Image (cartoon, rainbow, N blue to C red; front, top):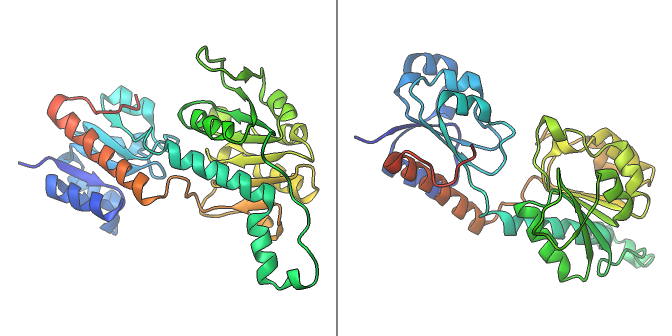
Length: 312
């Protein structure tokens, strides 16, 4: 007998195929009335496959009374009620590490783009403006000061990338890390005040919501750049729009937004911000590795009672 799984949304084709081959999978997105379906069949499922965007609420877990394991496609746990899963004795697997390189690469792509005006210059050429005047001067990256808020798995890879650009690195976490060679700043405001580039690589959630405030942006200043590859809610977007409009910071590169896929339209008129549709980990290689870890977490749980990589 195959274990019965509930899948909240499609992953990537090879993952969806592998899940169907190994398990009895029901695609919840095909149900016109998911609540009615779960009321009738929720007790049938031993496992749930979800994503960082959808997560799993306490209410959903309550509709799956025999749920034993959740396998999350992604590293973000903002939408996952981890406390409820722990209380209910449900194992939660997720997919860290495998996306570190691609997310760090994207952080540097944003940093380079907004500094050197790559996307803005591309638009300049396409509009025919180069025929009338040279493109304005931009900002050098090499040798500048990089501040990282959240020097965890991804933040450490970003720091390694920065060393290739001869950048000086400082960071701020909840507490200093003993194994890091970089200087520690006691607050995010102090880090922003020091940095030429402030990269947000922290976790999300209530504790860090809008932690990048107007005060932090003012500390970053008119020569400073903000890069966010963490969670959209970590930034006060209204304050950021005003800071960009008023040139109180030099620019921003954003891969994530608080209400994505809805992006504040005020950003669209600004040439000093680069906007990506949450694609930092969206490479063929990384998504394949994430999908494999979703499968590995499930296989490990049903074989041993513990997921391979636990979020609890």
